[in-house]
Length: 497
Image (cartoon, rainbow, N blue to C red; front, side, top):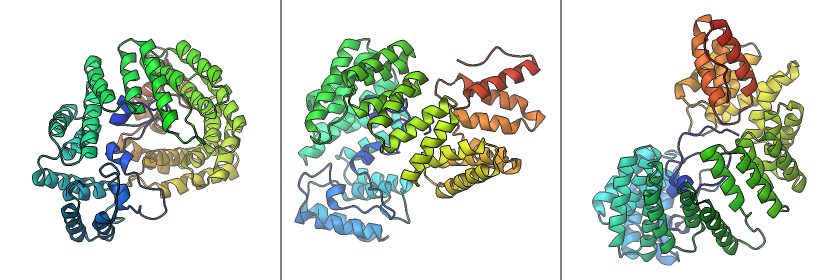
């Protein structure tokens, strides 16, 4: 489980999910991904017209067969053929999005295995969509999302504002119109929050709630803004309303876990680092929903992210007892044990997780790290097997979010085995990518100390690591190492939180 992520999607800001403290990998086009998420298969994802048109058409039927034909052509690499089919489909069904925009979506979603998720080509098709259909709001909405995830907030503001303006006079498809209005309001609210203009964010979200009053995400977004406007009681009520709406719309056989108290706990921790209120709200959630497995699991995640490891341990242990077959519970129990330096227990639960799901990255990655710390050659050899397997599955020049963790772990395993050259080469690639966790900073610092000239660089890495408020396994070791280096150099004050 890695807590280092560079971007947060709009949905994560206006309607945050309670995961390991904001540890969310931002897909470049999060808005699109939510509507058109590919199914996990060993082959390239296969789409149908029903999936591609999910946010545009309520009833996909025979008149949309050309869309299926276009998807097939695109997946086979015949882009011209796909485009022609989309144009034919638009003639037969005027309510669908512009053909150029549908081409862009297929590019972003990686329908063609050779092209993969081709962002550059997707952008080119969006530009064509703007030229061909200048009154359609969706290209501006998509580009607004892209700009936001890339940190170009002003550009995003302009694009979402234009999408909102065009949506007001859009009459071609009522469902698409409502989606444009919703996405524009979401985007503008997220921009206002990024700028800490919470009154403006609330204005946008109030309009969103008015537009779609049964939308739980809108009420979650409202709750978050109310919290930052110092209205915690109203925020709690809005979270409770979101819980109510989610329960109404959910499958009766699989009701969602109530999250109002835990959402509040996460916000107090995020804004104020208020450990007491965080703990009190977790205890309240557990008291109010003692038999809810999801509440136990999420309580452990929030407590772990806040470094409240006693609470995290209690809730993780309870979660495992409530559902001993749940993979996430095993992984969480193992990670809490690692943070508490209970490596025997950690290894046990990660082994159980690996046996249950041999392809699970968190299980094999943590096993590699745990086994590498031990002196037995057989365990260090097994650590290397896991580490090599993961860098092969997730190469550093690929697209997977796990690739940096995999390379970092490989470097540390080789360092523990005494293969310093491999360790230096692997960790240098992580440095070059500038995607560092607190643990990887510690690993790199340890390797750098093999060169006396790099002591200052190692200290800088350790300083950043120990000042982080995120949980990381090597905090104690990093703090002690930094103190030792400072004592030798005669500089600095005691490190750590």
